[in-house]
Image (cartoon, rainbow, N blue to C red; front, side):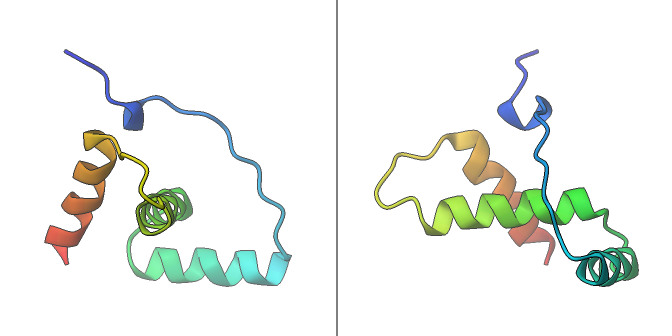
Length: 71
């Protein structure tokens, strides 16, 4: 089985105000999502919206499409 890029991980460290972090975690929990899931989706959406003509890999577009079809 071929691993997609979404299955490989790299650490991304983010500094954020503790009040915003707490509120973000509460909202994520209310939607039954982890903060990591939401951040990964935000990153995918940002890449797609700001690709500026770059060719995007199928795995990235597929991951974004999966989320859109669940809504």
